[in-house]
Each structure stands twice: as structure tokens, then as C-alpha cells.
Image (tube, rainbow, N blue to C red; front, side, top):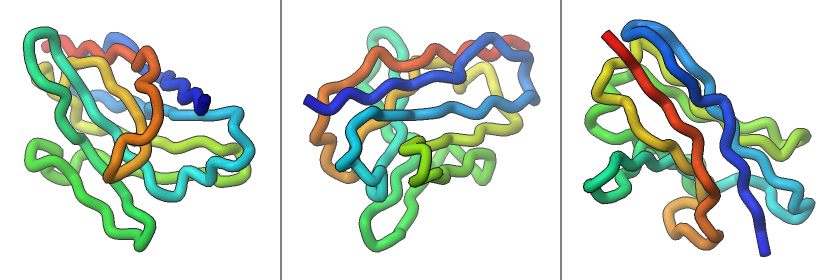
Length: 115
């Protein structure tokens, strides 16, 4: 069973930046087609950003150029660089394969943005 581990969340002031990481110990997983989702209590999980196998990248409408996804294949780590954070970005952030979420969801990493 592939295990994905998200990290890098925290408590930050609005306008600041965070970089989230998604890592796996699964050696066969290239992290070539991955995405980030987020969820707040009482709401459905929503796509933040995703990159498919052809390299096409999609961002949620709310991103508005503030976030960037990237990958370090050597370290088997997938990143979400978030800048100009807003209180509305407060959520638990998860990674998974994209576009189909093939793996068991991890525990996520909590991002809390205060004004």
C-alpha cells in the first residue's frame, strides 16, 4: 500500500508563504502525476493544483497565481509552494495521484492563516 506523507503546514499570518511537501517511501512511485487537495470541516475536498502525466498543470480558480507545484524526483517529494496566503486558505491539505486519486489519503497537513 502506497503511503503518502504530507508536511510543512503551520500557523501563518496572512500574506506570508508556506511550502508543503508530499513524500513517499515507495520506490516505484515517480510522483509524475500528482495533485494537492484541501478540505475544511463540513465541506468537500477541493482540488488546489494538479499536474498530469503530460505535464499539464491545473490550479483551482481561487489560487489566482499564488501557488506553484513542483517535484523533486530524486527525493520522491512533491511540493506546493503557497504565497500571499489568505485566511480563506485555512484547511487541511492532502496530496494524491492526479487526476485519479489512486492512493489512500494521508493525514494531511494543517494550514491555518490568520489576519
